Length: 289
Image 1 (cartoon, rainbow, N blue to C red):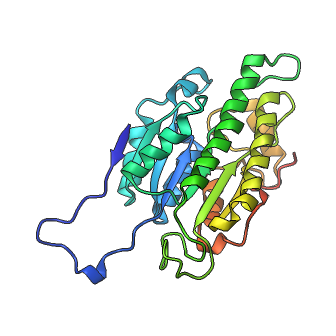
Image 2 (image 1 turned 90 degrees about the vertical axis):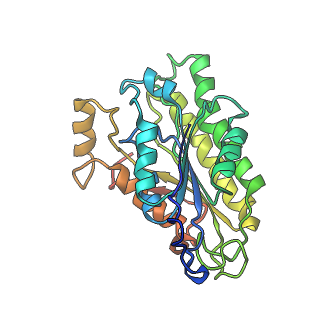
């Protein structure tokens, strides 16, 4: 576990009380295990936009994937976020365990405070189709992509302390004196890739339904919930043939980047994005499904 706190003011140089900066809102982001990943891109963008960041990672998953584990990635990402002004805590967590969401929220709250935005960017993803998927692989995909996401959203809803009508991190946050934006945000990353990738696609479909249900069932808390499909983003999992095919199949003639997804998530987490709720948004450059 890595934690980076913002430096305190030098002794004797405390700023006047009226100049104290408002508390930064806190985002909990899952699946931030590699510096080139979408989760890391989202964390950097939110840190730059004034958020403190708690994030999770699970090195054993990366180790068994084709891209391999990135040694020291969590500590390196945490340092980047701290350099951007964010208080940061990195939590290694195996999301196949049903008790992991409680432990994650406990750690985030103890280190940083109550969570304002929950960003679900974790995934179990091992290619297999209808005929060759094993029961063990199917169950693991649903445990991570669907069950863990439900439990994280449930834990978020049970603990949420913001009040409807206040802006995330802005005037009135947590006091009910804001401008009717609501403070809470849930954003989950999904995929429409199912053929040849059955357990991944099916479990992501379940994630979609869980997240969109939260838009209605948590509305009384002032929470919005949306799903984002980032389209083809090469974070080290594509071979040359697939990369070329996906590039040619995108009208803009390029693949997506983590920054493309991060900009949309940043907007959805902002006061300006509060009217977007209960949606499955495609941010994919017009790529055909």
